[in-house]
Length: 316
Image (cartoon, rainbow, N blue to C red; front, side):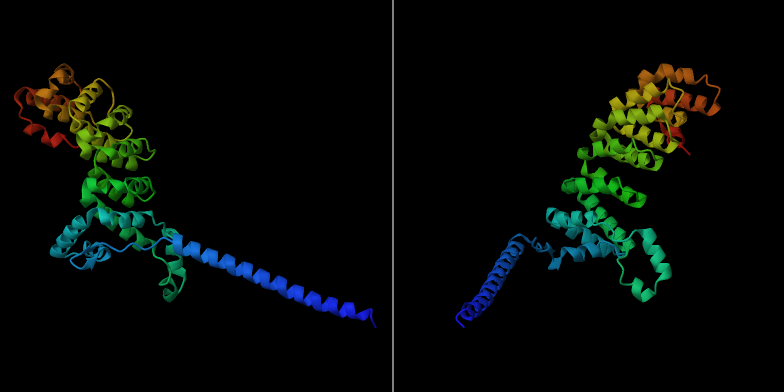
């Protein structure tokens, strides 16, 4: 009988120990949960209050900027310019959003699923529209939109050409800091993208001078007529350093846009005098059109009247 008492006590002690261990584990879990909750509360990104203009939030003016009513559109753009720097972080976040579904997948689902179900799927076209909208606003902000340069650069090198073109329009308004981005695009393997790089530099003008070596390469390689034409205009916009490169191109078999090139040199007026000897040689060309435009370019350089060259300034 005496031997069984310790056994009962042992069992009771075992239950007590199990309860104690369970209670300690519960306390530990509660403590860990409390700490995790505290970390979340402290470090969870707080939603910043939206900038306000005329008692309306930023998102309202972004939507209004797309209005077909010119009065509403102009008022919205005025509001967005006034909001300025305070609204840029929201626009950047919009550019950084990646579509949950690709357009191809969404198109397939839209064709095969019930419309009621498709209506609950995230629409990549709506996202693209909002991103284009954001880039239009950044374009209007001009140099003030420079904090958005990294986000715009990512969009500029994306695979969607429509987004690329809108990104270029915003980048070229930012100013000189966009020149390296355009220069890098000139090395892209696709001519449509190289064209966007050259177009951006043509708008930057002298602010794009750091990218002049890239323009020189585009002209000397002459891989595509539209890229060459844009590169010619970019070189002209860069002033005398760009004009020297254009004159160097006269002695090369390429570019294929040589008529276009000669016309722009002639339009430069007295700055093109250093090209007179090459132009004189081209007046003996077997190509009648090239011969004629070279003659007109010489006259333009000597007289300053470039009106006759206007039809030749753009490749058709």
